[in-house]
Length: 260
View 1 (tube, rainbow, N blue to C red):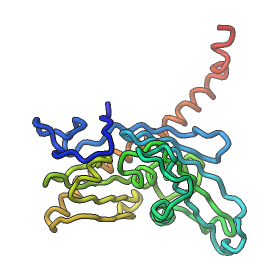
View 2: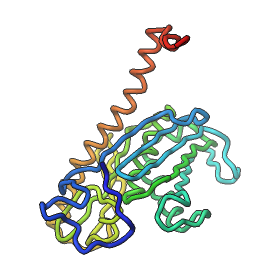
View 3: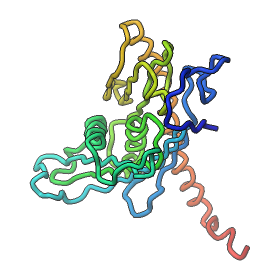
View 4: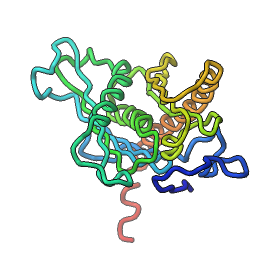
């Protein structure tokens, strides 16, 4: 059960037993739950619960580009709109998108675009709308992960999925998957994403202080965590088609509960 912590800075970020404030080990991810096909009117959609984060992504396209001058005659374009709901943080957020939301929208688009075969869709656009309904650290990584899942659910041709996670340093210790309070009160924060068709880093940002030896540890811990996140993405997509297969093989499945 994730620990809900008020937007305050505690004096210590580890408990007396050596675990983090929410009970995790240093290399342990927060609980992650994913689902796809959650918005029926979208071409593809996905929902993600990652610790206290709750994020939904919807994909529309390929469709006509508006405004028209943004269209490219030789390829499609990807447009990402990352937004945080006004109630997603402790201090009510302004409804209008801020500079940070525009920056993260651009980061996610740059991270995902190399995965797509946009040359197959000249003059059109794919639009990804991401809504953060509850925020608790690592939303850019969680949003990148759920956006890729929504694109896969939409059937958009992709070279692979992309997975992202934030690793960091608190009280001198390197940890995986920073919560909101760890992100704000910690010593360093490093969001990282991997594209799995070539296992290359597609997102790498850093804020804080570390040496080269610590950087290598950061990358090793991140890679192990990213493999686990990728497997959850794959299992989520597979579960949808297993369910469809079961419904197809049993045409009376939908009628089994009628009359009850």
